[in-house]
Length: 433
Image (tube, rainbow, N blue to C red; front, top):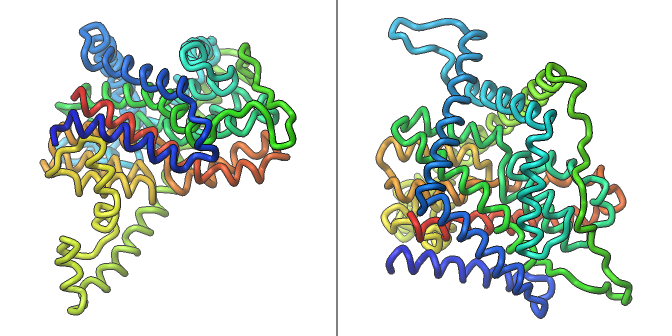
């Protein structure tokens, strides 16, 4: 089947899966689905198929490249030591993560201090609110997720969270799973910049497009799975949060220097958290692979491995089999479907940072085509993994303590909705790449 048809088929299949998982299949939100998909297509066509959009995002990608280079200069000043061949010893994943997240977090804090990010968020929220008919608070949170993390974005609308409807709460959480924070996004870009420098600008443009497209995509999935209702079971009306919801600005720093230091401090805390998760999950993967490898080395497993099409038994191999239909749905080249499926499974079971690092290495080594790698980049561009469920519950529950049980019940469904939003974004992109 041609990639174009597979991409369209994947969109239909994902919408159908979301409908099957809906809490109320009779209330299919046609307006939100149609307008949300249309908004995703408009964004994709603007960036990927118009000279203006392509040029604008290429310029933005080059600017981000300059930011990464500046972050490495900062790391070089702190870790000044050069080995004989001239390669700085500090250029490893840990230092890249720390340096990049700290610097980007500081820049974001500066942008927030001067109100730049607030205006961008409110502008994006206005577009989604007017085109899709969603409420003010949930559209603000969805737009904020493009720039902030899954626990930072809800802080911007925290006064509205206790009175959100269940459908709004689902949209808030799904948006957090379907997008990534700017600081972590820069780490993905750094991986590709190190592995394939010649594709740095192109992959950056695709990752930026993925972040924008997945925001309305999250609404599509969330509203299908938990549709808006007009009244509760006892007949009382459901009150939507106001359409003119404003950002709860919080503390933005007394002055520029205060904003810079606060942003850098927050970035360090985030970077340490990311590194801790990477250490834990990479170690866990190797432990699981050791156990699976021991089982797979037994003579009685030979027939099973041949039937599965695997040379050795490993977690990535099993995940590749499980998620292969998803890889095919989103339009990945058939020859690369197993590898990309393994990356998708790794992203959900462990962490998307591990999946991106593996993808960058695969692209460098020629194990996947450039087109398949770009599609995979769209599919992985979200925080939809099991560890993030606990992060969201722990981050959002304190803002609405009385709804902790409800948030915990919605979290697994929101995680799946966030993953499917990313896959749908990838399916749309695959028809244009």
